[in-house]
Amino acid sequence: MRDFRKYNIWELSHKLTLDIYTVSREFPQNESYGIVSQIRRASASIPTNIAEGCGRDSDAEFNRFLTIAMGSASETEYLLILSKDLQYIDDEHFENLNSKVNIIKQKIYSLKQKLK
Image 1 (tube, helix red, strand yellow):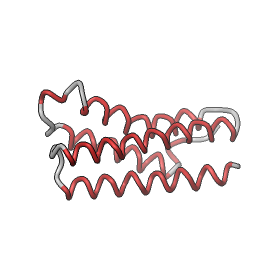
Image 2 (cartoon, rainbow, N blue to C red; image 1 turned 45 degrees about the horizontal axis):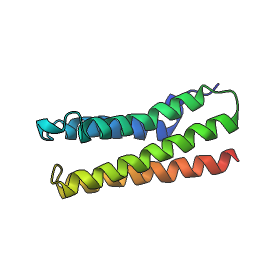
Image 3 (cartoon, rainbow, N blue to C red; image 1 turned 30 degrees about the vertical axis):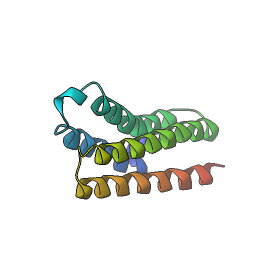
Image 4 (tube, rainbow, N blue to C red; image 1 turned 180 degrees about the vertical axis):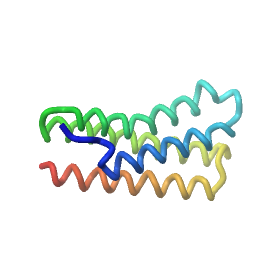
């Protein structure tokens, strides 16, 4: 069994989730059950799936959960684009968060390649 807290991608994705929770507090109140809920769920799914994969018995199972985390990262990336286009976040916040998502995606991909 792996300790998910020792993985840099888990730490980065956890910090991203915290940042998204902070930024999304400023979204319009009428989006509480819409984009706020979706972007928080999608971002939290990244470290959650990494942690769950670490609790599995094989590299193949871990790899499967990394694939799910990658999907959640892509979903988060789109929701950031949507949030920017709806003017819920400014360009500076978007660039910062989008950069973090893409770093996470690259690291997930690299880890997946090592597990093959």
